[in-house]
Length: 258
Ligand SMILES: [Zn+2]
Image (cartoon, rainbow, N blue to C red; front, side, top):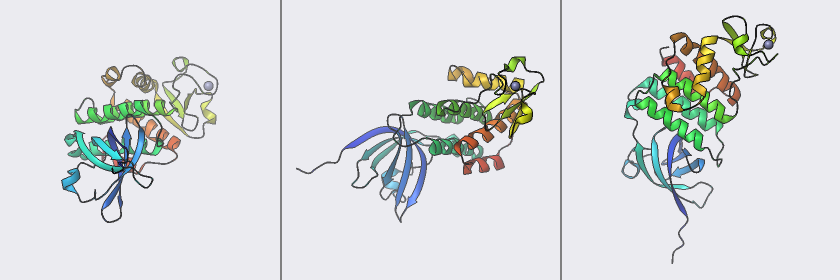
């Protein structure tokens, strides 16, 4: 009787692929059941026959892995369950999908259960594929929800200095302190080290986006100003808390039209 190493099957979104030697790939996946995992695809670099060219970032797959002799499981089979051809055909959509997957790849640690993060990424990718909402608004939705799940949701309710509620603050534009992750009233904003400024209308829209049912939040319509301010805030805030600016964010900013 030959010893069969244990294997497992799971749905997975490919976050990152790295060439390993002449023929192999090391892949980073987000799975619903097992959190983030890495696996090696032997011969995956050139084997169109075996993996059919589906080992591409942000593709949704069903994968079968077998425990390897070394540290990494070996990818034995992969089947495409979420073809994202409309994202692939559109450079701006590809840039957004790349940014979201890089944020998750950098933040999520291997082996931790992250079902809600998996569901959020899948929702955002399917929304991008199906034109559920403009990519800019979808990116605001993704980033607000991700920050909440990652435990650093921006505090947009009250002043971080004196506790005054946002709705009672003077002025239409309010400061958001990036390091403190919270809004400040005009009196407290003088001490802010690194602030961005937002209209109250934008702040209210961000709050609606962050809460409740995803489908209801996805029906929100943002004004062009709220889109610019919301993206400006979140694309400064997330990298600050990740401790690094994702490479894909630089590319996204160069090619998009906002
Ligand atoms: Zn204050």
